[in-house]
Amino acid sequence: MPIPPQLAKLLKLAPGLVQEYGPELIKWAREHPDFVRDLVEQVKPRPRPRPSQAPGDAGGAGAEPAPVAGGRAGDIGETIATMRMQIAYLAESADDTAERERAEAWRAKIDRLDRANSLIASGGSSAEREQLAAQVEQLRAAVVAAFLAERIEDEGGPSPSDAGR
Image (cartoon, rainbow, N blue to C red; front, top):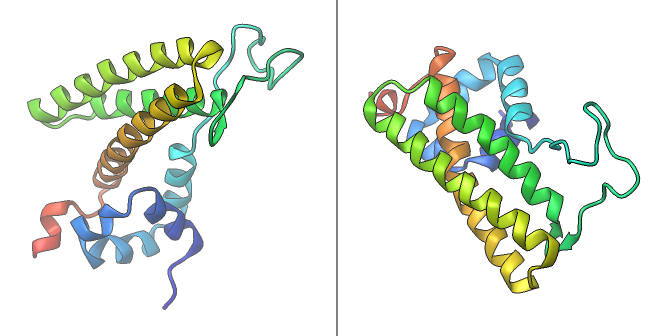
């Protein structure tokens, strides 16, 4: 049976989940397509309001960010904003001290990356922008995997410990 499109999108965002959870994840996700669809939407980067935008305004004159290698400067800012929401969820739903400490460490790192993005987007070299994009993407992979695992567990889905059963 082919993998449903929404599940394929989910697995592209965090390919390690299948290895960690085993086939139980795919079975559970097929039984909960609405949840998977919502989850995919939650991990997509969202536009964040820029100082020159009114709340709810999707753009406007002068709101276009400076270009960066592999995308726009705003792409990194949008990814950071999405990760910030995911990290907040992880901190709130942490089951133990280790999860809380991991979320706090990610929060500190995302703050540093956001400050660097503010500086680099307006005048950094292309090498600096590429390095920042790589650091953001590296953190994003870890945060998205943890966020997806936590949301699935919170929804009553399988946990990594179920994979060994």
